[in-house]
Image (cartoon, rainbow, N blue to C red; front, side):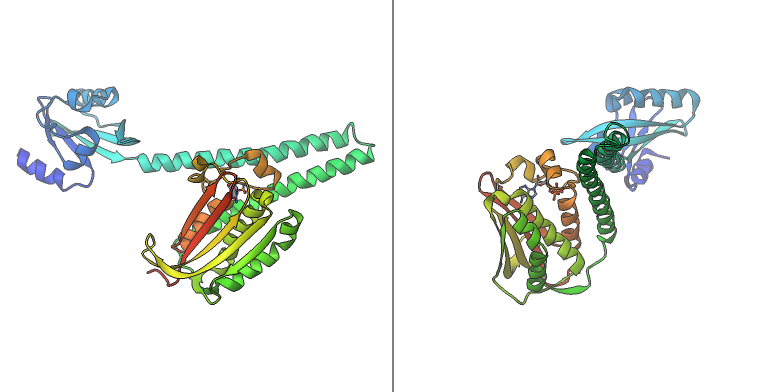
Length: 345
Ligand code: ADP
């Protein structure tokens, strides 16, 4: 095959392909190669073009033995590390290199490993506490009714914590599963918010917080999943009560539909605002990550699992809406949800 024919064939391929001639110089490279190795490689010696020892060794091996090799190529794209699987094969005296992008797969693998490590850690802490108390109750505190009552109380607290974690994990996995399915119900937001607030009254009064509902419109019906939207607003109001209790007030407001630039469609806004301590700026972008907490100790103390906002974010994505967290230290936090008023195609 002439170089022109090879070039036109490899240009049609969707992955990076590079051909090294018998003279050990690059004979041809397609445009996908540019992003990985840079431009103007044709004519250069392959050692200069590729530079990574593992790849260079694999080419040498294929030249010697004719056997195909597979190696890893660690690259960089802007600020991001990239990983490619490079197949090196002999092709009629030339050597053909193909690059398969493994970056997304590696990232997904890493996320899975981190997630399992996080869940294990979250479960291990209450389990260790439970096992410790069981040991004490069967040993030293066996005949001490006062200690027994106190320890059983703590054990119940730890067991509840594990139950909440397992519930939230199941909820997260259900929500992730549904994310691509459009919600089909029509939801009356004013009624839904009133019922959420009513349900949280005992929690609010126990924390010394008054929750108010400000309906600037009362007949907003949006396409949605009522059960999931209850979950969203319960979570946001609960967070405002838990973390903003020092402000004594939480206000929930429903604003009428308006054109929303980012969503490029009309949307209603529901905001949950507290007057608590607020959240330092650098934490805000990460709050919707699983298990991310500003203050681990405080979250555990108030019964948090660190999964609430991750669940909220997934539900809002399913509704093709937007979540906005604004906070000023010492002044409070306002979390707004924008929900499209018409079904998004
Ligand atoms: P958690 O189960 O820990 O409450 P979330 O995902 O709901 O988890 O929230 C993540 C973290 O965001 C919380 O641990 C808390 O640090 C912070 N946070 C959420 N809402 C508020 C709020 N209204 N005021 C201050 N901090 C908040």
